[in-house]
Every structure is written in C-alpha cells, then in structure tokens.
Image (tube, rainbow, N blue to C red; front, side, top):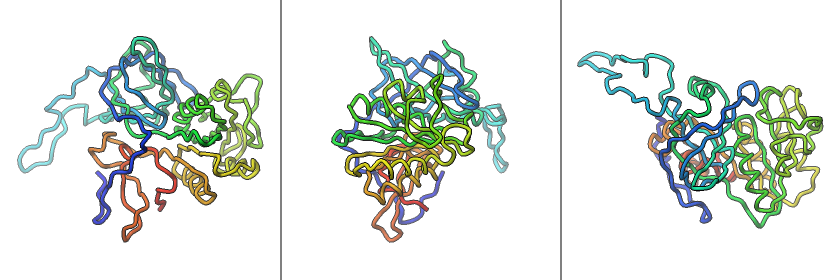
Amino acid sequence: MTQTPPGHNIRPVKKDPGALKHTRGAYQAGVVSNVRLCEDHFKMRLAVEGFPPTRPGQFIQIRCRPPDEQLRPEILTWPDGRLPQARHEELTKRNPLLRRPLSLAGRMDKQCRSVELELIYRTIGSGTRWLAGIKPGEQVSILGPLGNGFTIRKGRPRAVLVGGGVGIPPLLYQACELVRSGINVAAFSGARSAGLVPLSVVPGKTPSREGDPDDSIAEYSAIGVSSAVATDDGSLGCPGLVSDVFKRWIEHAGINPGEIVVYSCGPEAMMRAVGEYCVARGIECQLAMERHMACGMGTCQGCVVKIRSENESRWSYRLCCTDGPVFDARELYWD
C-alpha cells in the first residue's frame, strides 16, 4: 500500500454535475469473442445482463481465474514465532490473484437489458495471458463500472483524441460518443512499432507519413473519424512520438482553443506532454490516468495521483480509481 506523507491527505475531487449516477456491481459475463489484434493485443467482447450505464474512461475489474473457483482459507499458515508459510498454488505459483483493471473500449445495448462490453488488452503478465486463453462460451467475473469517465463539452464543436498503446481503447469508445453528439473528431494513435498498434488499416490505404489525419484506420473511419498513426520506429504512419505529431497538427490547423477539447490516455510521459502543451495554450484537456489498481474502489488507496493544491507543498494525493481515472490536465502535478 502506498504511504501518504503527513500533510498530504487524500481529498475527494469535486464531481462533474453532469456525471452518471454512480452504480456498480459484480457480474458474471459470457465471453462472446476473444481475438488477437496484433502481436500482444487481444479484443474481448463480453455479454452481461443488466450492466449499469457507462461512459468512456470508466473501467472494470476482471478476475483472471474461473469465476467459480474458490480460494481456500488455509492457503497461508502463520505458526507462532515463525514466518508465514504459503501452502497452495494461489500463493506459491505465479497465478493471478488480484483482478485486473481494463478500460471499456465500447458498449452495445441490446434487447431485454442485455449489454455487450468490448475490451482491448495487452498480454503482459500472468493475468492477461490467462485472459488470452479464454474461449467463446466461457464466463468471467467482472466488477464495474468503476471510476469517472470523460465529459463531453457539447458547446465545443471539435475534439481531438491522443492515445498511446493500451491507452487507445477508451478513446475508441469516446470517439463513438463524440460522433453521436455531433462533434467533429480527429484521432492520433501511437505505439513503439506497427506490431503493437491495436488497430487495423483499411485495405488499400496507407496511414500518412506526415501525420495528417485520414481515413486509413478502419476502427475510426467506420464512424466517420479521421485519424493518424505514429510509431517510434516509423514502421507505420508517421515516424516519431504521437504527442509531437499531435502538437504539429494543432499548430498548423489554426483551431481556436475555445472550440476544442483534447482527450488523452496512454503512457504517462505522452500524457504529460499533451497535457502541458494544452494547458499552456488554454486548451481544455482531459487525461485518463493509469495506475496499478488492486481493488478499483478506493479501499486499498494504492493508486494515488498527485494533484495541485494550495497547501505548503503545492500538491496532495487523490485516488486514480475513484477520483479519476479522468482528470483535468490543469489539476495534475507532474514530478
């Protein structure tokens, strides 16, 4: 658990008055599909009965074990005067014990309260590798929806999405909601290389080498959104950092800062670059922060984010899972 230094109490963030009523629960979800997108990324679609309303930026906690598997109460013994002894594979092997937080990449409401949730995840450790082996027809246990999502400013006619790696999924969901609200959207997606971009290229199209948004990315073009791709090694789209590509486009587009909102999710260095650029130019920017989350509900208090404050140290802690994960870029205190 992260220790909170004296004088840096975690205080609740002032909620957006337009936010959804916060409801959440535990659900058994049926796996509709689970397909590989690229080298390390998979897309999973889950069918859930009666799942509460959601918005982009929110997430779920998914159990990376069979939902009916029970942890045994005797997995740990602690004899008097001796060190504790792990007895079973729940602790002795590299099996996933904690749930994994995954952002919602999409949602489809069907008849009779049936909901399909879309998740895009990268296989990094034991938990996500277990998820990659799940077959259609199997079930998983999920908690959600959790956290606070992006806010759509209907008085601003343009929006820009800037995503990197596993930060791209919630922006796909946000793109759909923005288009439904009649907002003009441009998207920028970044990754280290082409094999790590969890998106597909429209057959016969090639993403711009200059970083100009076009209709070459299938997931965005299907909903009428122009997009650009940047890769660190130049293997797909524009060579370089997606934050730099985004900034160059903004400079040349001549957009009035008061007409645009920027939404971003991905590596922290990328979000810092995007956030600081927007704050300096008076552009509203909402960042979906990423942290390791053991519970996702504010109990463990391990997913802290530094927020600007008027105290002596000029910052205080808030929780990524309950106060966020979406924060206004002007609030964040970068080390």
